[in-house]
Length: 397
Image 1: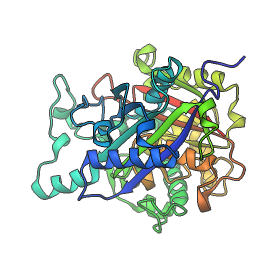
Image 2: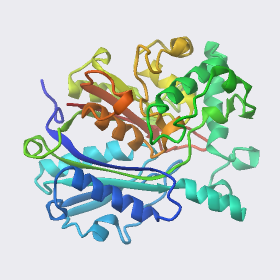
Image 3: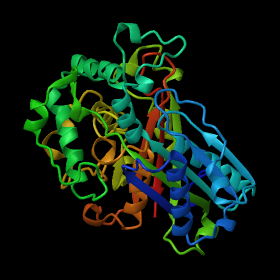
Image 4: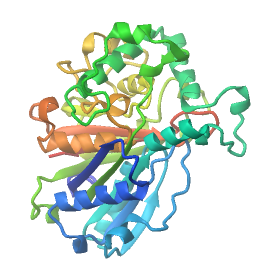
């Protein structure tokens, strides 16, 4: 039986800006991405009557401001507009919200857009000595006096715990970094395009927070991302090949993982996975590729286990021998991901999935790609913590 989502809604346009844009504002990048997505869909600005601001924010996320929001900059005749922010799940949650507005007839075309200036802000912080979020104290946050100064600090808790429980080796995290860097070599927009990585180079890099070194961490980027969503019926009349939303789901660590400490070796995947795959009426074997949220290397390993590519504790062995890289058995993070391409939250993977399903991925194109999975997570509920919420979406052509 088809679910509430399966192929009833489609992404009909995408806009992507990735790189270094020190001369542009956050809002300019977001607005330009939205304009590009509307143009890509073959629509005029006056056709788009709904908009969602996707807020990329670290940790639990901050409250986005509607002031001078991108729909006003573009002059969109919106009948609905609001913002979504929860770590790295904004675009998937935003898509779920947009489908309801479309279903109720409150909008015909909804543009969802985000922007980030993390790279430029980091350059300013380095020049001025103001490290911004690194020195900000959140009320009730207990970790900083004990050395939890950045995301890598507490993400390493989980990598180390997996090593302790299952015998995972540092080299196996390196296999993930090397494989995803391999995909970046076929993406001209990737930050590490033209800069391959070997396992020896990975192992020789000095540790930052054990067991992680610099190659275990995501890149820092400027950029913008946007998609246009509409009903499958309207999508038939547009210029671009539709990319259908076949399923989506969200999971939350508060349901169980935090209380039994299972969050140290797994993510809140179960509910998200079961909902999305049920809606799409598929199994794991039906996927042609996947974009797994890769802010750090262990997150990829956890998801390979939690989605069922291998059993819990066997992710280290699974990634050996380039299995998830170019030419491997499983195409994972074909853009180069957050680790080696650009960090736009899970929007990095949504954009890549659209390119793959439209056959526009160039040298990294997965042959006969029909169904892809994208994931995101974040939004800590306990300090210090990691990735309390998890979302996934299945896209198809």
